[in-house]
Length: 293
Picture 1 (cartoon, rainbow, N blue to C red):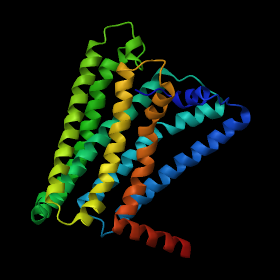
Picture 2: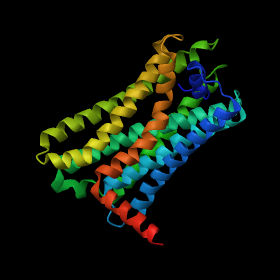
Picture 3: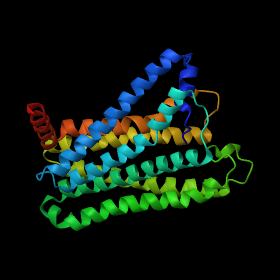
Picture 4: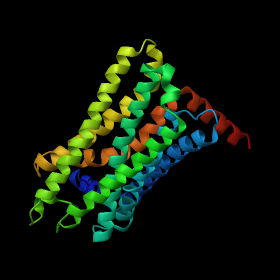
C-alpha cells in the first residue's frame, strides 16, 4: 500500500531537488508537524485521563483513537525524517516489514475503533434511557480490548502471505503466485467494508431519532468527518494500487498514500477538541493552570 520513499518521490516529481539547504527546511517542517501531532494527541489523552468528569464511553473511545493516531504517525514520520536528513533511499527487509505491519495495524485499529464509536453514538442517541445499562464500564473496556486484539489478529494473519513474496511491498511485481495475498486482501477488505456499512446504518438511525439537532452536530459530526476523511483516502490508495496506472496521476497517488497517515492523527484531536465542549473547556483550564506557573 505505502512505500517509505513516497514523500521523497513527491519532491522529485515536483522538481524540488533535495539540496543540503532545503533538505534541512523539509526536515524541520516535518519534524515540527510530527511533534505537534504527538503533542495534541497526548494533550487530549491526558485531559481525558486526568479529568474525572470525562469518564463516559465516548471519551474513552476517543482516547483510544488518539493512542492509535500516535501509532500511525510514528509508523511514518521517523523513517521519512531519517531519509531526508541523511539522504537515504534504502530500508532493510526487517525495517520495511515492521513499518508496513505497524501501518496495517493502525489502519485496522482505526476502522474498528470508528465502528465501535458509531455503535456508542447510536446507543446514546437512539436509546438514551438504556445507555448506561448497555454501555457498562466492563463492556466499554471489553470493546476497547477487542479492538486491539482483532487488529493484532489481522496483522498476524496477514504476515504469512506477505513475507512469502520476494517483493512484498508490491505484490504485482512478485514473481510468484499471489492468489493467497489477493484472497487475504479480499476477505479483510470485505470485513472492513461491512464495518463501514454498519457505521452508515447507525448514522441513518441516529439522524432519524435525533430531535435535538445541536446535540447530533456536536457529538456525531466529528466522527463523520474522521470517518469520511479516513475512508476516502484509504479507499483511493487501495484501489489505485491494484487497478491504477503506474504512470498517470502518480503525484496524486503519492499524496493520498500518506494522507491517511498524516491528516487523521493531526486533525482528529483538533476536531474533537473544538466540538466537544467538556474537552475544550478542560483543555483551556489545563493551559491556564500551566501558564499560571
